[in-house]
Image (cartoon, rainbow, N blue to C red; front, side, top):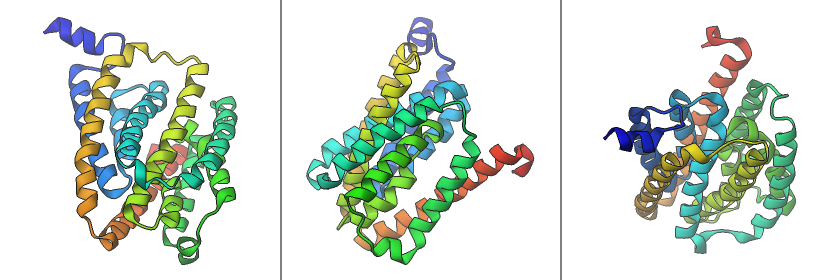
Length: 261
């Protein structure tokens, strides 16, 4: 047993209980995201923050979310709106490169605050919801979210309103969001690799997270297909609002100190 625990957690900052807890969260988070469009990424990020050091948090979260989003994209490939992908990808490359060069220079609280305010606006402003974002907007979205994800980790709430605005149905929304997030995580991880982060010791942990994440995605997809369209849209609005409130709280803590909470 000791040898197994050493294999799974050796060279990392994880206990076996942390390993087990995060593996379970990976399944639950992927299930939630596949069923309701998003929410799982922030759940994983918040839980990983309890067990992992800050410097390892964002790159490891990126690997887990890449696996979850690639699995969701593969299972729902026919529902992806591919016309928005190239412009988003170009913007993401530029944004990630800028973010990598400024990784230690910007206060995270400022980015969290800006992200929360925008997501609340995009979720509830009727004019935004009715508008159909074009290629230029998706290019700009890739640039801004690619920059932000290097610091905050969870840029899904920023991308989700655009996917919701352009998608004709809930399958379009979830599939397109997954495809865009997959692209973003690929470039983010490449940037962290160039910055010198060592992923090697975490490979057993990441493999377990990815397998259970795919299982959660597979299960959640069946729930999505049974949800009424109106129920999905309302659920997405509620989740985006709750995530924005959580970001506002995190921004207040970062900018004002723990006493703000």
